[in-house]
Amino acid sequence: QVQLVESGGGLVQPGGSLTLSCAASGFTFRNNFMSWYRQTPGREREVVATISGPGDGTAYAGSVKGRFTISRDNGKEMLYLQMNSLKPGDTAVYYCNTAPPRRDGYWGQGTQVTVSS
Image 1 (tube, rainbow, N blue to C red):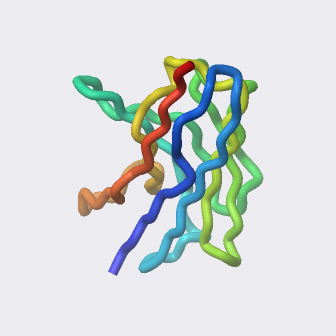
Image 2: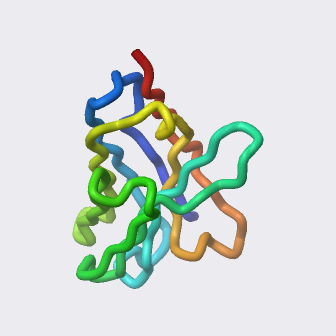
């Protein structure tokens, strides 16, 4: 069955960096656009970054452009998000999913990122 397992979150000071990872299985990863999403309490989940199936096209939310980099390894069925110059406003639970999100409503458990001094 489908599994999306996010990891790599944690507590980091403003200006710091983190790299998130997502292990995907149970579907044809390489054929799917993939995105990183994030959610804070009381707010809708938002798209942070998107990457094409082959990995040759990317797009970013305006709030993270120039600071975050999305990448993928189709051989390993892994998705990554390199986050630099982190700000308190980046604090959220981060999720990976297909783009658009899977129609069966499946989401992984997410990984918490907290940016605080």
